[in-house]
Length: 266
Image: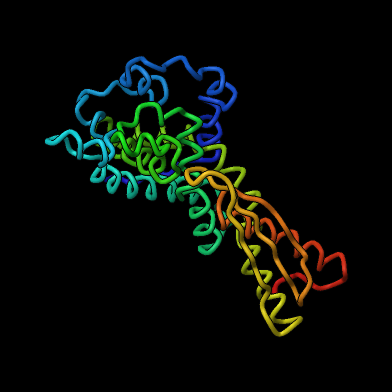
């Protein structure tokens, strides 16, 4: 695969191609229609190999009920690697001042099940996923893991059918805005680790983080409480344990700062 780099201007232009507002306005337009039409709209590509596209949306539970049809797991494996490669190239070019650690944190914040599932919902990918009866009844179309895996499988299929440039443009269009916004909030991503360093320095022990899960099994909500030196200093809600803990840790750091504790680099 030939390497490539992308300036920040390209990322912003690609992100503007399909804005979130436009995606919301289009909801329902492709329901019950043709996945090939949907793919032309969102990926700007007409698949030559339709069987490859169908494989990308075939969950293993569906394949178990339809013997002889390959699941999307191999395409997911490929798509994950392609996505990591493209995101690495995009953020490397867009953020020349970032060091290796910051680039790694930014990539992790972009390429994870939660973020990919959010994007899959934005582009309405769930409606096209083929699921077995049991998985469908269990709310599989809304499961973060299934949505994220299906998006990676689609990226793998797009790479095989459309090539690197087409795949790069698609990834930039659905993730470009996050590449910019997540970088601006990069300090939040390591709030929990930073809070641990501050507490060990100030109180000789790390903070206690308690997490409670509520809501439906397929779409849970997590509440994180951060206790510093026997006092609760942060309580936040998130869609994942990590998001809740990070948000609560950020709140705790703010409380410590307001009390005159040095929360600079520990």
